[in-house]
Image (cartoon, rainbow, N blue to C red; front, top):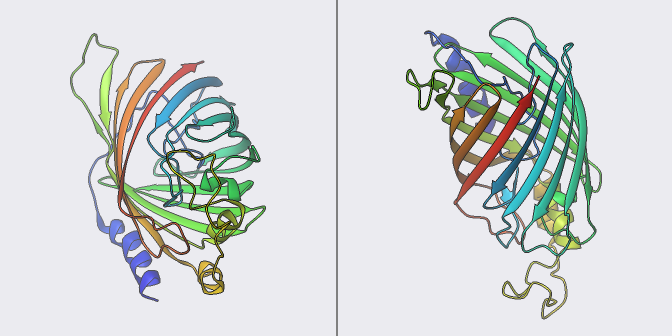
Length: 300
């Protein structure tokens, strides 16, 4: 009950805030949850964007694997004039055996109720190598619904995810952000800098943790991940399995992206500080800092 009260307060408190907020991204991006950086876009013109991203650790709804896994991704997103979009993403995770760990395909629709309320709905299927070690590999399908509310001083975002496959989970992510744009240029009158700090809370179930623990060796040698654990796979206690079905707060995180923007491309560096809570099983996640570097080029 205390989590529900917190949720209602976080959303409702923004309704009394006034001010002026103007957004002018190179491409007005929506979100599907594949990496830490939102990727889909909904420009007025038909467009195609390609990009690449590097991250210091793979995180999945506030949970990380026992070993840190830096990663590289490459992405392609197509946006139609009607609001329909499709995307593909490929992952290479360092310290993980496969040459390619993951390939994602998805499609969705972006909509707008008015200038202050926008959203998107999408479906993504994840294809994983059998030897992929990232915790995300416990799920294979995601239905994502995202809605943003611009209160003019802050923008609030509510995102719902239903993941199913080897494990079924439901997540609710609530974020509050404020957009800043530079009133100066760096090289010419076509570039500018943007900042959008945000505070976010993730609530949900975590059955994927139980599934992941059964299929992976938590206690492998970090210096030589190819070595098997000394006593076989760990036993996953039944009380953890029961608690993982509960809908709880999973993570609080603060994120600060800084972007250099030009008419056709964006370079973004971001920092995220995560505070996982209600951690179950053998993960033993603790507070962690994440760094990401992303490049996207937009064709239209």
